[in-house]
Length: 314
Image (cartoon, rainbow, N blue to C red):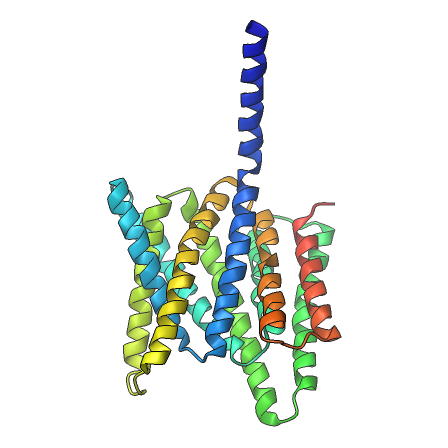
């Protein structure tokens, strides 16, 4: 009997140790899939020419309401409110900018070009680690960074070669610049989330962050798009549908992001999550019949290779 109890206790202890080691990995895998689906919904919204700021606004409203309801039900009190506001202002500003520019970029360039560029946030995060945390990348990580930058140059060259008019060429350049801005913005948002994940309540941080995103996008809509005609019922239903879907997925995904950040290394988490762009590319080829030429394949291959080189230790 004593031996059986010892064995059971030992197995429970091993299970706890294994979970503590790999919980961040499970969180990361889950939110990687979720964000891959979110990015595909972004693509659908772009195909239907939905105003990007209104889609993000509806998604932010959905997340704000969802998190507020859970805060009320749980009865948890706000602690370190000033710190939450500080992190939330930074996160929400760059998240809103990144989301809007990502949707806009998808209106100009294919997903197989746009999403690999937006995933250059991995490179930005490595740079932040060098400057802020005095980390020294290994030789393979330096190769990964170089490949990522080379990939951007290759995409620019391919885009120019694939256009037939100056107007198309201008649209491709605009799309690439928007995707690059989205990558920078999301990298700042993720870096802020890394700090916030261990300093403040995740649920309260999500609520305040998305409430601010809701306010920002409402101001943008009423300031910069005030003179544009109102959307019809059909377009409004699409905005409502896509926004709610993105919002629900974003709420679950971002909570998993913060949970992973609180227990795991930023570089490895980002390395794994960067592969989420593969999901919308594959789905876009299947659903929207986007061309997947050898140039697109090279882009995807270089992106995956650079992520692996950045993530792995040799």
